[in-house]
Length: 262
Length: 344
Image (cartoon, rainbow over all chains, first blue to last red; front, side, top):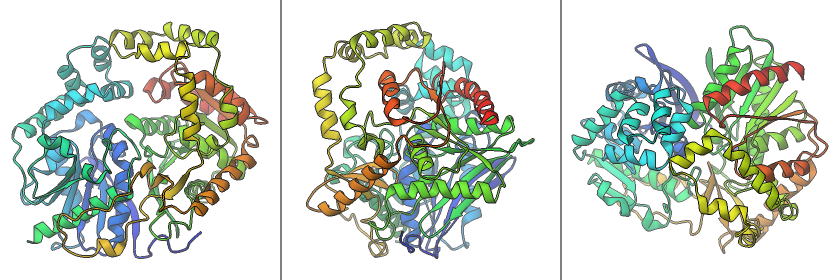
């Protein structure tokens, strides 16, 4: 086996970051500190689907000299709490805490890479630099798609909500169901973010041209479908991460930094 | 109590989690996840499993094999299988050395079960294997070691029609089936096709095509040059494409052989995998506890395949009554795992 697969300058660490009474699980790759890239996991099961991309991305960005931190939101993944503890406020405070804690120095630029509905929250940060991967800007539509994709079924099956299970079994009202499963606060918050959504500054978006109505009028646009790499949505095809796709996200991160400096 | 750790060497860095019990009983269970999932699992189910095991005195360890650094340097230096095996060995060594555990059991899910099974055959230092719905190549979702082993036997393992009816009759007695029927989530055409063998021939053809040796295991990010990434400000650069590249695992793609993929390296990789399977299938020295998922597709087929894959192995089967990964399922398997670990 080769001895030089992992560059020696790169160091990986995991940490539970205390934020108030909560603990956020962060995985950090420390490299040359060209910039801090904050990888924001998507929500619920989309997290697992995007996980391979984020892992590959973490490697590529670290090799390119960026410090990278990947974290779980409060109530998600390995962090503390339950999904009904979440709200837009907790998500914002999570981002603030992670960015401030892992920024190597105050002048180091940072980029947030967000996927799906999380983009609604990251894009609302003033003066932030964003890379958005197939962002959701219509939360209501997304909630409906959760059911259509049978994601809700999984959530209901795995979580402790008897009410959700009953609603699901009865084939009840979809919005009520989503609200029950996801948690009233976050549900309402994301709908509000969706209604208040303004195209952010300094954003590179990656996605499908066919989904252009969902696009957020980015400063840069990379259409992966045009490059024959993104034939299916990544959250529906776990592990379907091509080298080119990873390279595209890396390049978009560099573009985002370029935008910020311009 | 939840702790984190990171194992790092020249080829991989993998973070992991230790779920420590308040009153440890000296038993450790290492979770090998399905690789295309992370260690959290669908709906955080693996976190729940570990918490539940820790609650009954078992030290549970999860880790992230997806964090390997394959492809960061020479793509041909290592194979995916070596990395996956090596990462499990490292976690086992870590558990023995740093945690002082001597009775180590491995719990593998799906494709992770397959890797755990083959790895244990190579390194028989483990007390037992606990497998959940082992991936034996019924559908190509990931590079599958056992599928290399199955083409010859796969053609005669389709259950006959009477058994298929029996399977569906049993399913009709389950409340979950009726919930699915009421919510219009049953593919009736698919059921009829399966029951009356309408797709048998085309399926076999597809299977043969899928198992064609014309594929190569390639590392995922091998084509990304650090120099490319460092070339400074970029405009909407055209991203180089991979042609028909199809990603199958984190950090890994199954690439159809083209003029860009040297035939020689493909042959070497396929031969290496085939040899490993030929050598190790059926020779697992550790006893196996196997949890059947009554809701799995091809359940009957899987049971028949086990006769080949687990030949000469000591296997104890447990039929679960709840959906894989649900909290009820976690409640169901946790005491059985404790009982099994205490006995083996």
